[in-house]
Amino acid sequence: MFVYFLWNPGPIAPLIILLGAVKCWELLRREFRWKKAQIHKEVNESLLQEIQRYMLLSEEEQQEMYWHWKDEIERTEMELSRRKTWYIPIFQDEQKLQNYRLERYVEKYNQLLEATRWGVLQEQTVSDFIRSLQKEIEENEQEIQKQTVYYRADAKTKWTWLCLYLTLAVVLAVFTAYGQQIMDANQSLIS
Image (cartoon, rainbow, N blue to C red; front, side, top):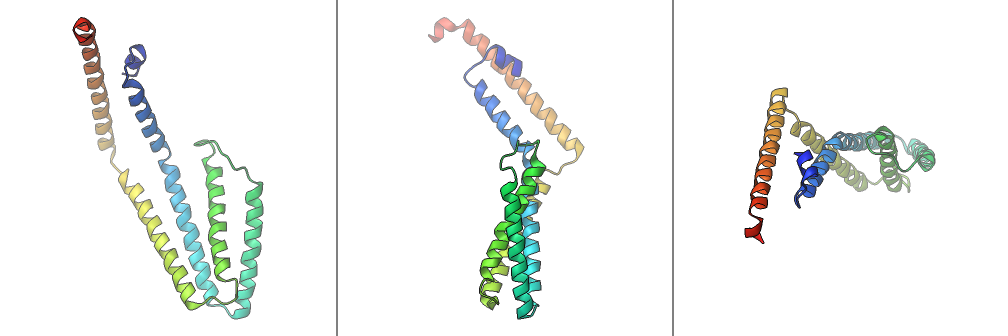
């Protein structure tokens, strides 16, 4: 079919090729999106554990923890500024995911530092912060679950759908070629 479109292109051929390329790109990036959602969830869970640990400490220990977080964030921000900001998709996904993990870490811990800036967290602030983190974790979990379940199928089903799509492509190519022959044969009637 692809060869036919290159040999005798029509106005719909570029659109079909474009839509196919977009779908292929989307399928290639599916795992990357899944890993990003997983990272977001892990950072939120880590932050939630830190807050819970922070709440159990004395005021002096809380202050020490605050300064530890601040130093850690500054170190991470310096590392981020030294890193490359642009990566080649698919080939450098792991580096991009590492960068994304650090960015989320800095973003979330900056929010935590802002909440703990004036010493002890207020109970209302903590409960709101914990609630928002738990909501984000649930949303990330749902997204991860949706992506995991949506593409889960046994080999027989995958091969069946592949055969059906290829059959559809062949049938459409045959009908397109047949329609083009009819139009070429009756060119005088069309114009």
